[in-house]
Image (tube, rainbow, N blue to C red):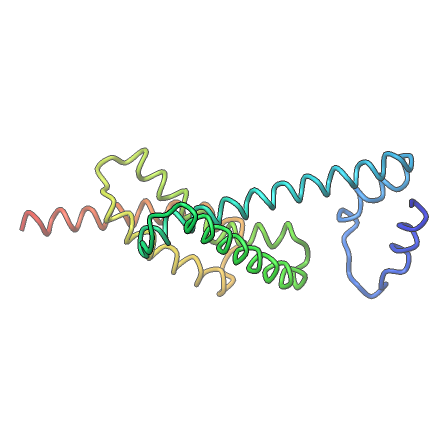
Length: 193
């Protein structure tokens, strides 16, 4: 198995730009572990990936069924109906995951893709949570509108390439709190006027 993996790595296209750090783990495994442990390690990695993927898809299907379908389209009260819909939504989320995985190869590596997507949305979520936990005077409506404005600003800043995508987390969190504070301030002034 070790020799097959080395042959596959050797046959890789030399024109493809790669970083050495992307292959450190693979190089260590191929050169320092015995064959049986390599197979065992691959089995462990694959089983962990399949388990976490199955859990995520199941959770997405259940949440979609309970929080969206059951609330906004109450067709039946029979549990079998909602079980069937949960399976359908799980299958749909699986198709979406496959589509995203097909597009993910266009990026430098998967870690970069996850960090980019996370940086666009995580700052906004952190700002929502922080404003609820630490600023009791800011009400939910102000935070909601601030989150919408912030998300638009963060996407524009990302596409304009004004800063590194990892800093969008900090920017999004700060903008949500700041904009929500001003929304709350102006809505309080409007009520008193």
